[in-house]
Image (cartoon, rainbow, N blue to C red; front, side, top):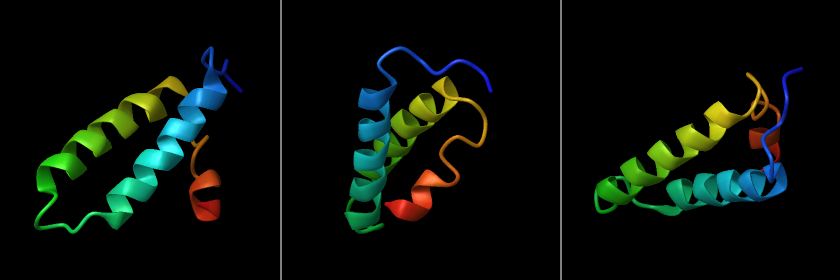
Length: 60
């Protein structure tokens, strides 16, 4: 397993929060927000080892 980023608990919380926000937003009215949230979530995901979030998303 590769190294976890510094402050990984904060990033993990941010990732989960962004995922919940994306699910809550209506796809038509919140397209811009969804895009920004997904971009930020991708940045966070890329900081972690591959497949790190695959199992954690099931528990959201």
